[in-house]
Image 1: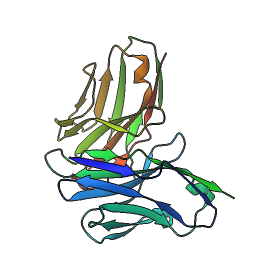
Image 2: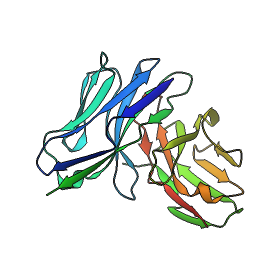
Image 3: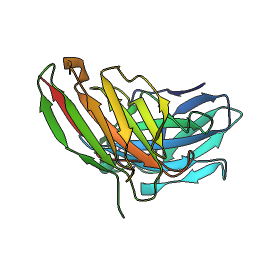
Image 4: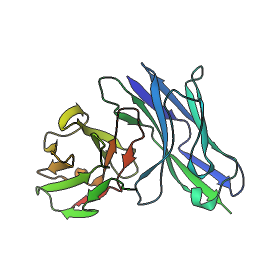
Length: 115
Length: 112
């Protein structure tokens, strides 16, 4: 079984300051992990993914995440927030087993960026 | 680059009516997933297809059915609609289970 816990439902940051979105997962198998962003009334956009290669993953728009197996974490970071980063972020886990890679979403973290 | 296409973008139906949502995956993607996202909620997995066969089933009501056709597009059929079915319905496609999943922009269904 797989599950995802996003530790913060809301994060507020000032423009130009670092962003940290925390995600912990549990998985019976070697998981694939993803971060998706959803802007208001928009679809889900893939930011980055981890699929058992390098543990530090770089994504689009300056985001990166580090897979830490010992801590079962996959936190998302960005050094400097931009106003356009205001959105909802989902941490997602997938197990490539007989469930054909079904995605399990976290509850989401709403990011607010203030000027 | 081609993306996942969903139609219609918006749909308004009355209670007890039927709705059909369509999803056209990225060319050569062999797997399609359907998700339902209620207001203020995270997406919930409904059903998936691999090579035109149902591969997994999640929290999909018996009133809903889906299939994947020979051209790999998929349709989600929803009957006896209820107010609680109002949600954003996403389709995603992938090539392989650990590939990046590409989502469509969703169909917003409103049941009145």
